[in-house]
Length: 392
Image 1 (cartoon, rainbow, N blue to C red):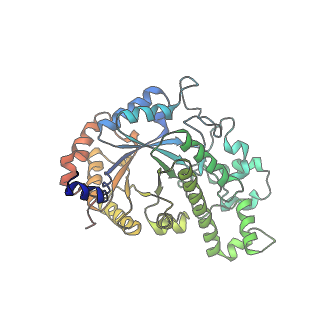
Image 2: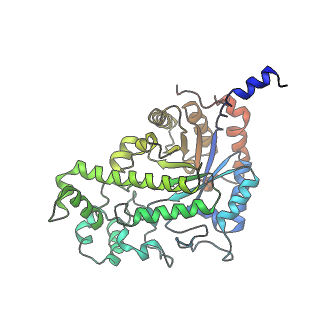
Image 3: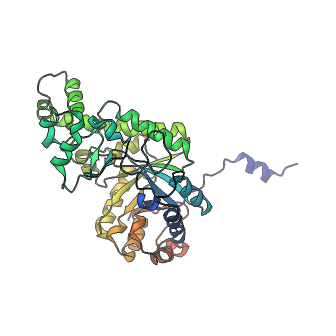
């Protein structure tokens, strides 16, 4: 006969285990070029005390994994049967590391570089975002000339990293959902990480698809460039809503294919700038449950500003949701990285993501573990097993 204590134990709901601190590393596609580069980055991350890899498997509209929908990246070296993502997952699992599939959603190609056969912009050049400066010309040229027009207009502008897909072009959301479905169905990932799910600037998107859709929503005809000028606030809202629908669709697609997957996004840390200049309404995405975790890209070098950004993001996200502070390691010394990790902990973050694996030298990994991620250092900077401390 069971004891009373045993019966009480059975009757008591099991307490949920606190989530461990996120110690993530953004792994850019240069680590996926060969078996040697894949093995090296996994070993380095384990040596550094990290516990999760965010792997850029879709960099510029190409695939660093096996896909029937997306063109294989021409950067990959080695035999045709080499699957960079499959190899990384296998090796990461052996080292006890989580793997999150990092997808650049809208950024799809560099300017001036040839596109691989089957690339989405070769198949659908009319899907490209068009800047306001090229709007009038974009309405009159053939679709196949649009990428050339965009490049000629904006190349050299620091905020524009290449060609972006328009979330307002018919077929784009459906295509991206198919990409996500195939990816998370085919690989046993822990998470899906959405990046470049934002507009380059307020000067985008003035493509025909976007302008026609806006005019139609207002019941207007005539010159397509007139409605955005007449109704600037509604034009903002129209573009913002398109991104929100896209984020919702991608999140739902991933969760359908792999229940329990964690959805996260790299976001502009200043929510006002994110919402009104990049049309990335990530506070709403969090509050509506589209995201399980948010990662503000707080890439500043000034620790005071970094703290302010993390603390503000914690207020916006709320106390119960994961907040992973993005650390711009590429702009910092190792000492600067360690300092940001400590500041993030005391500012209320649930962990950090370091950008990127390329930013640390061979001798830095062991020191990173010793000075940032050892149990002694975590305890000294206020991290407890039950979660991060409240912001000071």
